[in-house]
Image (cartoon, rainbow over all chains, first blue to last red; front, side, top):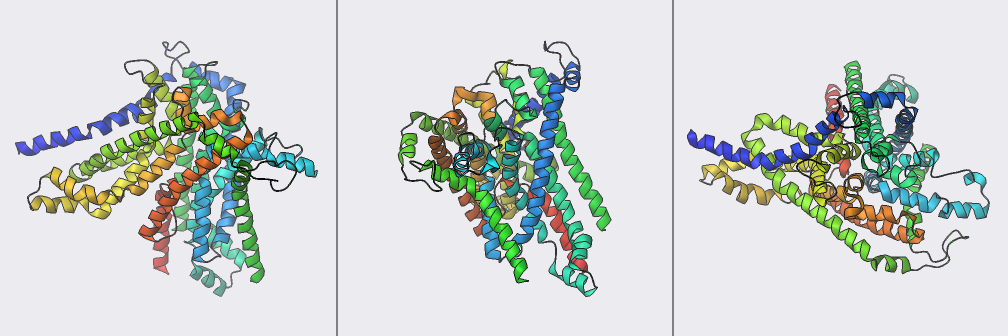
Length: 284
Length: 290
């Protein structure tokens, strides 16, 4: 009996490094951030000033709004593209489908700094295509500015699409050929099949993918940093400059914004979960 | 019927072109000599790559990134393997807690993680902000979900618990059983999640920039710093970097493909497939009613 107890203590000791890492680098920082957000600028007085500042400041509300719009917009576009593209995927042979997935997988790794680089090289002020189109005389890109909202959307959509395709593609496997046959035997048209059977079956996957893409865009930092620096008012860029820049160091305010960002993401996940549950109940 | 197939071909064609054009453009630009008024470059040269490979800073940054990756992934394997093993064998009631702890970092964007880390380590008893050590800790948590998934799945496929029972019946101690039976069998199983973690850390920028920045220049920081230099040189950097990532993920894909021969679902998105599985189960339930 005693031996077993001793052994358990010994085993628990082996868990210690893991527990230390989790406390030190996962739970600890989260608690520190939440706690820090509840202090005034001096870091001593306990207050909710930081949150009041955010909700009163046009500037920070703008940052939240910009991030929100860009996240929603890029997620919606990518999901729509992915639903169409993934359906087209299923029309090809298994071998080609695997190849296409491979391409999606490989390009989904092309993100962050290198991706922004690539877009700057191609479409920036002195970009390859910008110059080329200018010489050829295409006015299409004359007004285009990569370092702006349009540019950000373009790059965000680029890194969201492969991810969306990979997430939605598997759910098409759930739409069975037999269902289509059954539906047409019973006199349903192609349109009514998708309206009544196809889309409802895909819906949980679409909603789930949407919330993942939304969270992905909300938290994206590297891409925006490389593309617009601090010229564009985005939540992630503001947090970064508040906690780590030399000019505007306000860690408490940064923490409060961090808490807001984290809650948006948790909110997105919660929404996803709720939607899926509701949709499933309808199915049953 | 035929015309609808053409439609799908066009859709796929457009997607592939859209995804590949930035890469092809960057590749061409990195080997182009003179290219300003023609569709394709007038001549090709390797001089941008030569310039890059003669840059000491590039090698130094590369070495620093490698150091961080090897430290973190090594540490993760050494710590997580016994932890998951012990918890699943002896403290199975904590399994859910372990799972929640291991999956939580997946929902926290690096930018949020960095805020707390800076606060915690810039003053107080442990001041490691600005040193590579804070990155090792932060990255340990970043790759936690992937390592956890990989190790737990291979322990399950191995039937580790039963194997250890058998070894103990035959007179081995627990440690012996782990070292001679479980460990050698699991190493190949966790290769995929290790490579995934390597690829993930290779492309990590947010934490590195916010926690350490220029004081410990990693490959990503080096790239961001070169943002404003010659476009040809930066394209050479991007292509070199991306080839390394391709090599890593290519290996991962090949290994996964060999293992389950199913449709390719690897990469970091593999984690997301947890939530996919729920639909699949639901669908099979529906099929049963057919």
